[in-house]
Amino acid sequence: MVSVVHLLKTVRLLRLLRLLQKMDRYSQHSTVVLTLLMSMFALLAHWMACIWYVIGKMEIEANTYNWDIGE
Image (tube, rainbow, N blue to C red; front, side):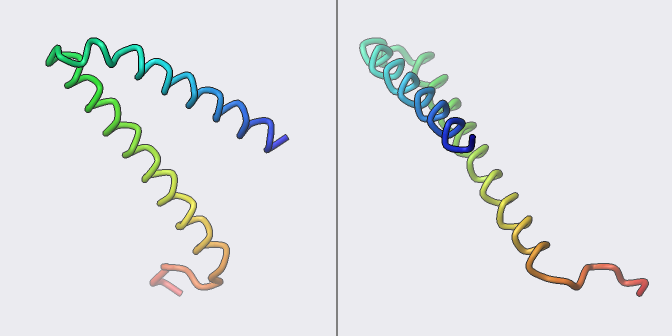
């Protein structure tokens, strides 16, 4: 099941690349370039947040102690 989900995400990324190739001819327009840069920044920020979440989740599962001061 997980591999199917990853395959679907890969297909979406390939479609994104195809869209970027189509937008290449309009790259001289500043609005398109600005929108593309903002979209790429948002996508990168999302990926970084996902990685940060996975690291935190793995740390919580690996350590038995917690941040409770009242104990």
